Image (cartoon, rainbow, N blue to C red):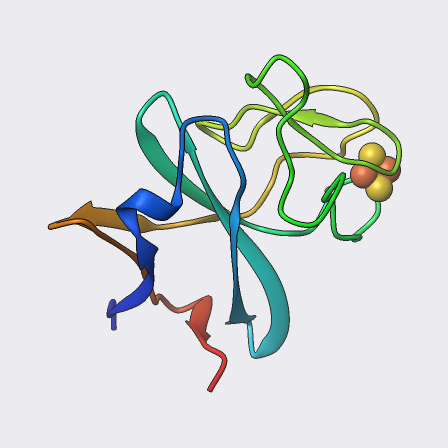
Length: 120
Ligand code: FES
């Protein structure tokens, strides 16, 4: 069943700024995830590169490249579209795993599904 889980306050996510990390169970396995804001809209993904399943942060909670238009993996430079998680260049093998989010009343929630459950 799809349940909203509080992720952060809206003000915690600035356009092309730092991510907010959170954790999920993905098919019952513990995984790091992150939320970012891009062009005013919040998006969330597993923090797992499609090239090698490693966390991608350049610095803790920093995923955007210098242009602020791409999410970049620090290890080999794969670039992903912040809106969709699709690979745009680099050694990716597919895209990022997207997590449904919603934003209302100054709060951001992620949503559970068959794949995603809270980690507690
Ligand atoms: S691990 Fe991300 S580009 Fe290789």
